[in-house]
Length: 513
Image (cartoon, rainbow, N blue to C red; front, side, top):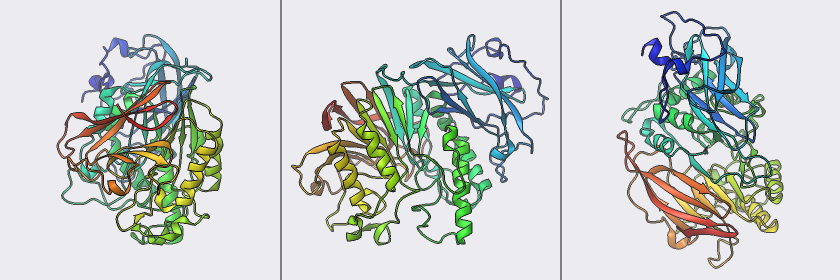
């Protein structure tokens, strides 16, 4: 792509503006040598909005998948200009500045753009080394104490690069939501395998360079870039951002073989690369082999997002992990969140901050038992006392509209949460919406028969297709559309709505739309 066309390139459904409109106003325009490669190959992103600010992200990487993880950048820090405007032609700037993209952080950029109006839409872009980035669209949350406008929120998880194309990300961008949540497995750590739709680069990732390169591979995808460019994101990781089914400092298996020190270093590298590649606030900066991720994000008085971390603080999976009949899963001492996070969640729910309390987290929450009495030890079924404490806390605190948002299982589910799962007539106390995968496990099938449905009557919907969940949230109801993609092994399939539910204010559980 020529130097000129790269300067006016805009992602997704955003309109391409003229060259004159894209001049950076009062910021001096540097010249770039004709041989200088375009540095914005990974696109742009925004996230963590509040009533007057939002995080803006990009990462300079002219050769994004170089094995050293540095994206083809020199061993030097680079100045990056940024701008925020009320329009995509940037004729009126509301915020701008310059910061330094540092070699030590793989030239990732996190801008806290402040001084913005609440409940408002903005456009942003960057400039470095003589090039202008793609344009991103973002928005702020409503002001504290105000309801704000009705809004659309989409959420997704599980995007294995080798298993299929990211058409679902593109369809999310087509919907132009106000906010996107990603609930884990943004990348997968495994080695390249033969026979997939696409292929990872290299062996299983372990080092910081490995993780940076893997993020660059995934972020090079234009459909993922479109979803990032269309709306701000809230993100939490699951296991594959580090290693499959790890629990706190315990590995699920010994492949690849690592010493204790090497495992600690791997976890540290994974968290650093996650922070570098996500639009997170500085409060989430990793410290050693941990990263502070559980947090509350307010959307005025309409919604509060309680974003959980169910990996860093959990007890090891009971009975050796897997689908098991396991009495140890009921031990009161076991927790999937850790005690501090559990207290934090219940305290937040008890504050009644908004109409809707949305719990963004990683693994299946409702009970799901099979005919042998076995349950998934990696999900909340493996931490049943932990789940019982959360659910009793919801009851005791009179939480009006608790909705759990879940990823991980590569299928869509719509669930009622029951006070007593062993008693189908017990009170419904909340709802769970489970998004399927973006691409993981491939196309799936057309089945909507609920597995073990007769044993779990609170499980109301199931679909084996790939896709995402789109919600429309108002003071009176939350509407959830389970969006389905028929094929991810071929690129560009349409999205259809497999099923819609409504959750009415003050009436827990899923109702037909």
